[in-house]
Image 1 (tube, rainbow, N blue to C red):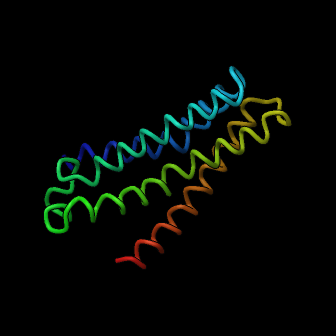
Image 2 (cartoon, rainbow, N blue to C red):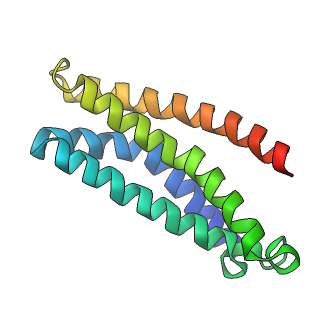
Length: 137
């Protein structure tokens, strides 16, 4: 089970950094802001589901924290960590694509800006998450 959750974590991380910017550019160019924010909302929902699953005993916490402290201890921390490291890049990409889609005519240029914003947001999310989780531990 740990291999499965680890594979899911890496897949979601790569998708939020490299796949989502392409989807965001497509959504903005194809259907406008409504489709862009709908796509972002769907991404956030998937991240919340992954965080809830990862915090559970079934999702990989069977031998770690869930049996000792319970789901109420692991779930908020999992939601915080996943929200900052996976959700923040989605939000940064969405805001960058929305702000620059009228200024940049190149889809590839907009994609590169989205990837850079996602990467910077991921780094910021990791730093903030580590500091918050260290403070509440």
